[in-house]
Length: 533
Image (cartoon, rainbow, N blue to C red; front, side, top):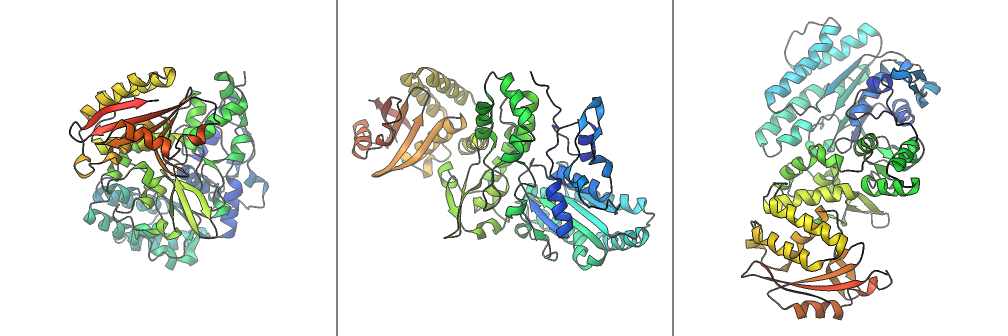
């Protein structure tokens, strides 16, 4: 069996990663391009996508720490390879570096934000022997840039990690958001006016700076968030996975008793699918990948890290929506710049947060198609959406019983047992939407959302030549074409399946096809009749 390597789970320090002998996907080709071709940059990527590690790596480059990029023997005798930038003509001069890190989850109040900014500025003032004459962050920042340049003879590098973290968690609190914006404009406003003292600036976040209204004065930032040439600067590309990380796929295949190609296919379905530019280069979620390699198991690591809780807060500020309304939706590029002041328009929030990604780009019409990137996100989003719709907790007993019944159904094709479980589940759901959604679409949407959260291969409103099939469930042993009716008859449901040929597209699949009619009653608020043929 191949030897397991060390994976940087939870490690965001480039020095710790390299010195500890951890695996590092070499991003220095793009780092070299960035630092030699421009000066002030902005990058937005979803949370846990490697932004903090990128900032740490940039700091090491500008601090002249060439030894971290050369080949050397790390802890436990692990050989670290030479990285690309060490083979270039980069001079490895030491620049003064100022780093602001707003990624901590401990920032809750404006007072805490003020303290962090004050402590960050104060640490550099102390390091360079500067005694601040005022408390104003704007004046202190100007003084730092000018004094550091004068003392060292080198212009200053400013790195800002997750500038929008505080604001995103404060959305809905108008006063707090306005106060935070004022703080950020105050401390970072000088970066443009003091350009003569600035060697390089790099700001990261989840949302585009134009959406937050923070950097209106800093309008010279080069936004590389959706550029083809920087699409792979965070995350793991398909090429990187099959070259630099090939040994890790091979080891996981051995541990799971399968082939390299099959393991790669499973990893791709679970964690691939992110696209950050029109070029549509496949990107994998790095947080999920390193956790999967480290544990040897494929699981939903990104959502388990707390993302779903943040999503519930986001959904609570949006109009009611269903998966079908966001998966496969088309939008213009201007949608990515819509304000985050409210969540009345969900697309920017869902895209920037990593729940949706670019699935296609129509160059002729200049339209983007957005959708879920992979199984992990699709399942996690559906689970969060379900809890938002029904106002229930993740450990809801009826939901757990239904999931168990679904797994039995998946193994045995015992449809009656599954339908009974669905009826029991609907009997206990607090119908938050029902008063405003007295039609079959409500039941259709909730059932589809639940099955998606269970990981089912299910399609909603799948188009045929004559109409849209309500639900099509693809199981290992069979295919179920489902039509839902509200205060109608099961015969009408089955007749519609036949009349509109919903099952025809699966005739060549090889699996048996079952047509299922389900009737919900407005009086009973549950299934009152069903039939399968």
